[in-house]
Image (tube, rainbow, N blue to C red; front, side, top):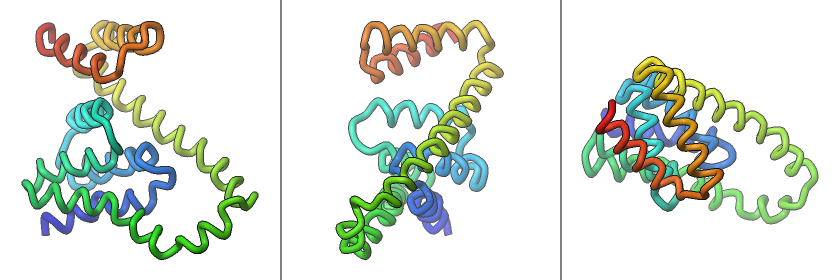
Length: 175
């Protein structure tokens, strides 16, 4: 039953998350945090930060990590398969249609309508992470980490992996 739940937790967001990994992150969070309660919002945000610092698709990295955390090596395999299965199935079944209608104005318009929804879902998730951080470590610590992260990534063009590692060291020693 546990492996079936791992499969569903990543297969359903894979089907509904139009736009790839970033679009499915809020859906995965809903499954992992709210539905199955395998992680807290804070733990999920840490997994997301770790996944973003590594190369490759975020959805598969998160599926592998969370699957391993819940069900060991087999859970990781089930999670990764569930994350890639929707794309794999759809690509096999609909390859002819995708080729035929790839330049359609209706398809392009649909993509334009979906992008703001994805942005809102990611914004809501970021707000939730900020609120959890505020409740956990306070306003000043949250502000320091937020401002420092922004300056390092945007002004000084430091790679996000180093910013995340720095935030982890900061939190480990000072919080």
